[in-house]
Image (cartoon, rainbow, N blue to C red; front, side, top):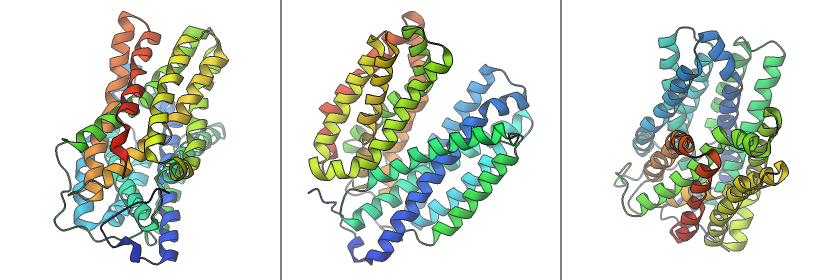
Length: 388
């Protein structure tokens, strides 16, 4: 059985409080995913209300990503100064407020300012909640990180569906977004008091330029996020071009990826306990390679969709394992290690889609994604770095 070692005195926390903390931080992951899902459903409405074309919309989405990446190092510093619970609660409340503003604001300049604030609050929350989750995992002494990410994936599916229902019910004018934001705000306040409190390590580094193990972990996270980001932006186009299905059917391919990823994350902790993080990481990397190659090589929709589903199964537990390893790096606080690795990792979401677009412009999207599939081989070859 794999055990989680931590030099901090987390095991002294009462089991009841650790269990309450586990479900509280799980709720935060769920709410964060739901907020992102609701925003995704509102993107076309925000574009129409602001009167912007797809080019400006692309810059708006880039601003959100830039806000997240620029704020992640700050999250590590804040978690090291005030502890992860305080940062989770503060950034969670800001995330709720800024998501409401982003989906209701008028005017181009306020819209971009709201986009940056939304991305920054989400970036800080992402690092802080993962750091707090790593503390809960250490207190429990068994792998738990995959289930937290499962709640995030489930939240994204719920949020996207809820956003669509609200828009269909005539609440896409901002009222639905306001209700969701108010619910997230109230839930963060309710959960905040039950989050695990771990005193910040006084001599631990809270952010560092990536080098050594941090650099390798960050690059592996970058490759995994690059594949996930590529599927968000390019999977529907790939299926439409390769299998000649209509746009609505092509969109189902990404749904196959999302559903299998969410399901496998809830099983991930048991898989890590049974087989160990090294084997799970190796199988994950090889599965990502095989799934993406199947998706780009097939001209049958069901085979390509099966490939995307395989990527979801394989990638589900790679990032949780990388983040758990980042939180355990010697000489760094949990928040600092995660901030260092996550900043590099999320750059994959930012860089991969335009780079793949440039490659596809000179070849085609199948070739571009086929090249990206080699990332799975690199991840599998360097899997040993996640061993506790």
